[in-house]
Structures are given as C-alpha cells and as structure tokens.
Image 1 (cartoon, rainbow over the protein chains, first blue to last red):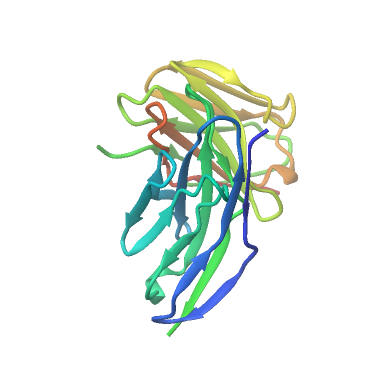
Image 2: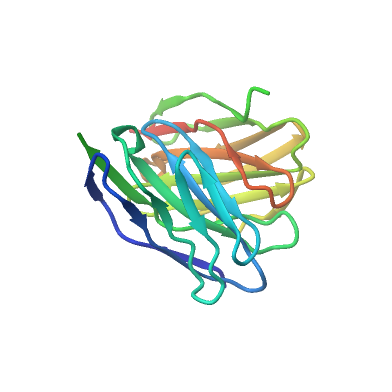
Length: 113
Length: 112
C-alpha cells in the first residue's frame, strides 16, 4: 500500500537558517506529491506540488523536487522566517481517480527570532 | 470562491449526544473527503465521496459514525452516540481529480 514517512519533529531553527524537512514515500504507479502547511487553528493549505519525476514544486520560497530514484520529496527553504512556524505535511496521490491523499504524520517547525 | 465551508467551528457536547458536522465543498469539485485529526493519530481519512457517492468508508471507526452527501454542495458527518474519545478536529476537503485538496477550517469537537 501507499505510505509517506516524514522526519519527526519538532524542528527548531533560528530565523534565516536553512530548512530541510525530509519526506520519503512508498507507492504503486506514478504518484503526485504534495506539501501542505497547517498554521495554528487552521486547516491544511496546499504549499506546493509535483506531478512527475524531476519536477520541482515551489511557492513562497519553499521548494521540493520529485526524486523517483530515491522516492523522496524533501522540502527546502533557504532562509526561514518566524512566520513559517507551522506543521508541514508531505502527501501523495497515486490513484487514477478520486481516491484519497495519503499523508505523513506532519513535522512541527518552530522558528525562533 | 469562499473555499470549503465547515460548520460549526467549535462544538462541545455531552457524552451520548448526537453530533452533526456540516460541509459545503467548492463548487465544481467532484470529490469530498472527511478527515479526523488528533495528536496521537495525526490525520486519518474517514470517508470520501466521488460525485456524491461514498467510495471508501473503511476509515470510519465505528457504526456510531455515518456520513451522507445528498447533493454536490452539501455533506454531513454524524456521530451518534458521541463518546469522549471522539474529541478531535474534523476536516472536510474537496478536490477535482488529482489537483490536490482544498481543506476547510475544521470543526473542533469536544465530548465531555
């Protein structure tokens, strides 16, 4: 079956530090890959996505590259801000139809000023 | 578009009472999903609908949980009777194909 594994949190960084949150997956076929972000008290918001191997998704300074050979989709940002503090979820969708996303357990990111 | 709309935002109820959570998906989206989020278990898919038809309800924890989608613009998740262990944040999401989900803001349910 499908699964997503993320690094455990919380991850605590200082402002302007470089961020990497690791994500690896197991899936049948050729999944689409996503990163979602959840700010306190809110629902999940789509941050970025990639639909095929070697695609790079990017948004708000965040990037992730779909690596089929390593089944990974690591999230990176060159310089984090306090406002980036949130929970980040890696997810995949492998169905051809409308079946559900498979989520990782989430990584809580804390940015200190 | 107002996004996915869930109501109520917060619900506090006594054990044994019936609870109904509501969701209005984005117009034009053909899939709707109900998730439950807790600290212990993270995000769990409870059930999803495609074109108003329930496709997979294997995530529904017990017979006390039921979900309906009478039309393309409305869905409910009902818990009867509710128990303290049902306390969680319940999210509704909708999508069109594989384009990723749009989530609602969630309903925080507390059963005392």
